Structures are given as structure tokens and as C-alpha cells.
Length: 250
Ligand code: NAD
Image (cartoon, rainbow, N blue to C red):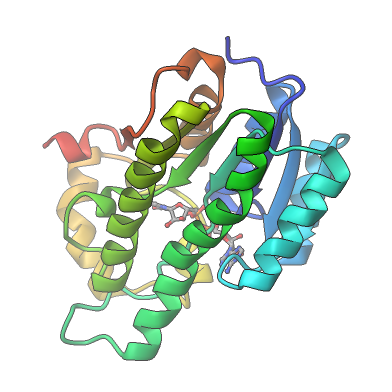
């Protein structure tokens, strides 16, 4: 039931980390995969690793014109989008509320929150036209509680949870499901790609890592994404799925 043959899956932030693992897993499940990343070189690397039935498209999810061009390109190539993974995201800073600049706030919200909104809005008309689809948002455990990840990131991921629930509620009758994966700390390049590792922020993560004992791997998120995309999850809509080794249960 997790066969994705004949499905077209579009994954953002697929040049690295969790998105790359999702793109690989979708391809292994038989899907055609549109690999999107703002970094064209890494998007092409992911597509080259996957091989056939893959399209690499550089795009900035925070830019409306770029998002619309991405969707047009995917539809032009494959004619439909069955699965959308809004996965691109930046951590950027673990700054506390009193420390953060407006520029940093805007940068994080633009990618994590507006990016999820813009691409969802661009893909929905196609899913409505084809009679259904599945949207999977990579939120975070920072989407359901405050903590170490900083105010902008935490607010952006709470917003992603809000988009998830809004879309799930609005389009259930149209056969469109929308769910969110909430990763705990996962071994990826996010701290480097977000301007470097922040020791003060990491210190705040200390108790968490002690509890979880180890970081998650991107593949732990990818297998859940395949499940949520598939008919095996046909009645799961508006769900938040923590993939954190039990961290958020504590
Ligand atoms: P990563 O840095 O390895 O991958 C993120 C990718 O997104 C990169 O390839 C980057 O180039 C791309 N990207 C950044 N801005 C973009 C934009 N404007 N448009 C298109 N692509 C863009 O990080 P990751 O850990 O794989 O992160 C993937 C998702 O998982 C993010 O949404 C992140 O918030 C979430 N997440 C990660 C963790 C973790 O511990 N790694 C925990 C919780 C949630």
C-alpha cells in the first residue's frame, strides 16, 4: 500500500538532508520526483543520484514568481502533482525574543512559513483539478512547543502547523490530505546552511540530546513521508506526526 508508482512527488529543500532522503525514498517507492532546491548544484546532485524519472528545478520557495515557475515546470513535464512536500527550511538563528533583529525574523518567516504557504497555494488548483493529492509539511517539534530553536524558527513552525490544519480542514472533501512531520534533532546540514553552528543554542538543546540519546537520521523522516503520501494513510488528514524518538512525549 505504500507503492507510489505513477505518482509525481515534488520535494522542496531536496538538495540536502531530510529533503534529499525524502526524494530518494519517493523514487524507491516508484514515484517520479521533482527535486527543488534554492541550490541548483545540490538539486542536480540529488536528481543524478536518483536517476531516471527525475527533474531538478532550482527555486526559492519564499519568492512567489519562483514558486509559480517551479509548479509550471513540474506540470509541464509530468502533467500533475500528486504529492507535495514542503520541506525547505532554515534555522538561521537560535536567538531569544529580545535578541532577534527584524531582518532575521523576516528571513526565517519568509522561507519557512511563506514558502510553505506560497507553494501550497500554487499546487492546490492542480490537485483540485485532478481530484486529490497529499501535502506533507516538514514542521518541527518546535511547531508544538517553545524551546531551544529560537523565536523566529519556533513561530514559523507553529505557523506551518496552522497551514497544515487549515488545508486539511478546507480540502478534505476534495480528496486532498495535508499532514505534518515533526522531526526532533536530526543529523543534517541545517546548522551549517543557516550561517553556522550556534554553541549557545546548542547548549539549550543539551537535555534534549541526553534524553533522545542520539540524533535522528533523515531516513527516519523519509519513511514516514512515503507512508503519509501513500494510500496506506488514506484516512490520515490534519495529523502532526512527531518523529523524535519520544522527545516530545517526555
Ligand atoms: P538542510 O539544511 O540539510 O536542508 C534544507 C535544504 O533547504 C537545503 O538544501 C537548502 O538549500 C534548502 N533551502 C533553503 N532555503 C531555501 C529556499 N528559500 N528555497 C528552496 N530551498 C531552500 O536541513 P534539514 O535539516 O534537512 O531541513 C529540512 C527541514 O526539516 C526544514 O524545514 C527544517 O526546519 C526541518 N527540521 C529539521 C530538523 C533538524 O534537526 N535537522 C529538526 C526539525 C525540523
